[in-house]
Amino acid sequence: MTALTFQAEPYLAIEHELAAIYPEHYEELAVNKQRKKLEPDYQHYRALVDAGRVHVTTARDAGVLVGYFIFFVQQNIHYKSIRTAYNDIFFLRKPYRKGWDGIRFVRFTLDYLEKIGAEEVYLGTKLHNDYGPIFEHFGFAPIERIYTKLLDGSKNEGTP
Image: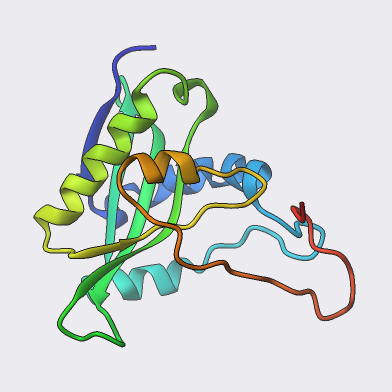
């Protein structure tokens, strides 16, 4: 492993690289996999790119993609004077989660979001793989909990 580099990259330029590591991300973090397969809606992503809403920061090791944050940045629909960054997904391959790499990646991403005019950032984390303490280190506050229910009555995966 070499020192990671962090950068903002255009989604369309790296879509194929992202797609190559989505399965690893899905296997580790997705819930209810028995009911839903990994099938990103690339057409929808591209439409959001065309609208200027998709922003990606990446972590690379010797040029190889090893992590990403994907945000949708837009005027907040409830507070229209606020430009808000909503995290879609984030992932950093396991070998890079030791030491300060993850912290440095979050710091880079937050600096980038501020640079592009985001005033507020929403980041979620799975309860079964909780990154909340890392986010709190950066001053994030837990403000909401999201619930999911399978309407066929089966139990959710990832339920504590």
